[in-house]
Image 1 (cartoon, helix red, strand yellow):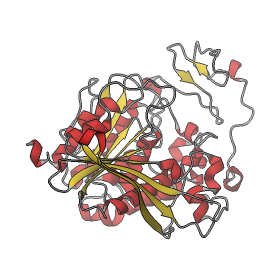
Image 2: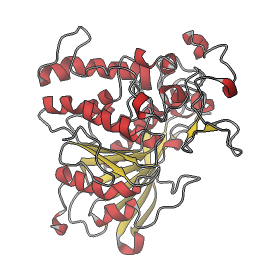
Image 3: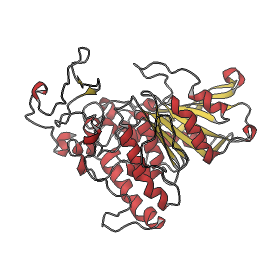
Image 4: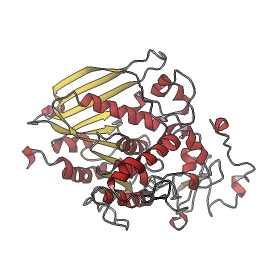
Length: 431
């Protein structure tokens, strides 16, 4: 792909040990010969374009943000009609072509099968179904993607209920301790709402080697991608739209009140899914970082270079590789992805000890998306100063919370449920 784009990494870089750009007092940790640790114990690495990971907020802002309310021809967007008819399509096109890749208009047919049911799941608290969507793979039989869903609905529901769809649901992330207390499933069911999980890796693997397999490989019939073809984040997002297709067949679900939640790389996915799919009534993007709610032009923790590099480039369109080391050349920034969710509510979170996803850069993106929400008659974040830890900002249609702790979504679920209550309403039996 780099050859196709005419893109190269930096040449003639000095050895990392003698690089004058290396942060002061950085050392090689004995357990990780591929990176460094700075004076405060943060992991740092030099990208293929010669940029080191930065944790100095005074150096983080690296360029002016594109204005979401100015057309490419320079004219200001002054009303909702101009947004919907002119500016929003411009922004969506930039994201499709340059960042995430285009989702094909014609994707294979899906047939649904309920594999398992339990009318008395979780000691009678819920009904349960396990569903698979079989994707027609006649175009490329060696690719075998599928849509895999689990669905819990509260057993005592008296009518159609909202459902929150969590991306993953695999349990604790390897290397991180298992969280204590009620799970997200417990919290959502206690709220009187349904809870579903979606398995993204069944749709598309999380590796560059898998780009000729999964749904991307199936649609391309095993051929390599073109620069504006979709990456894994867009493929996972496409699968989430297919989850809605199934949920719309369930009479016990209120499909006008569906939310999507994801953490880390799946926080990126949840935000993208909400931007692309208007049937999501709300979204919760946890610790989503670069490619999620974090500003590209806020150089702190995870950066454009990291996502455009060997380990994560498959998340994005091939065209994203053009911006390694050239962040200010990006035609858009992530506050505009948040703006694509407008006027629907969006909840973004980070952790005080989880600096890689850049909580400050995510907060600034939420602030910068505010003008679009206001233009569409909604309310913005309601603050321009980073809130204190564990103090949620949920009075507006953009929500934000910085929890005390690390890379996890569980501490913010109660605040998200309170945020979503404003739109979904408390179930009748809980009033």
